[in-house]
Length: 406
Image (cartoon, rainbow, N blue to C red; front, side, top):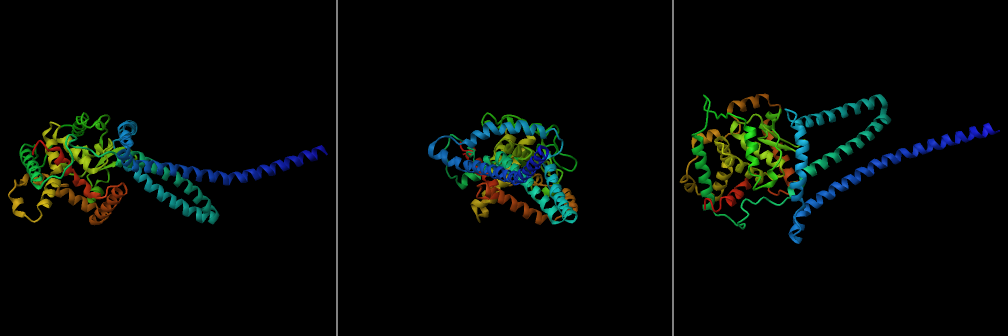
């Protein structure tokens, strides 16, 4: 009798264990859901606090915590992750994008296989596990994007001349600035080293020259101090060329990337621009301005020339817009020399031919998609004028040159 009672007790215990195990499974799924919801809520709260930071500072004069983050936390990510990804000679971020595309394709294939081999029940089981995995990946993406990018959009704006109050600048002052940039370009263009085809040449380590130029600005802009990695030339530069993209800061690998097909005159400005993003200056006009300052104060004639070339179109275009239809006034100003016009190109004609020959998608479509993506990204981060924000570098330059040119 004791043996029978004991065996009965064992069977009852086993059945209870099975029930507990079955009950634990849905609880485990609930744990995943709760974790994801809590993580998402935390990320949304962090973004909300970042959006509110400038207004809170304005109301209570407590300081903008996003500035503190850019000055003290962002350098940690640069020193850790940028150093790691800089060990690779290629763009690690570009590989991450490729792996992401391959992962999506692999999941689709595996899902179809599960459906055919295991039926709806097997596919349903696979889908549930996939959505849990995808949820964690999405949370990781949102967190990294927040820490390495979106918080920076709410830092205090860069002040090009903090000793002066903000004001509107006149067309005459813009004209002085425009003529100064044109004259500098015309002068430096005659002193550049060129090859047999008349193309610009540079001897030396351009990347190191640009890194050093950025470090020299750290006394005035402390966020620019610290470590600088190499700017990676991207494998898919053809696609970047079709999108008219010179460079790209990739927050997931903490890398500064650039288009490897560009004419050499674009590199110094692009290198410095993307490195400025890496050091917390996420706005395009601010990165343009810092890149300009770094180049013209570098002491390197080639970088100086490229710095002036980098802002020439912005300043000249702003001046043309300011005088509207008064063409006689424009043609009375110093003319942009033919040599400067030849140097101020995105890609050389022969490179454009290669890009078009190897293009898998029409260039116009790529450009439209790229512009739409950029506009959307900037707008979501509070940049109301979207891609036009690049041209706001002219306002920073007018402010910087007050007391110097006018």
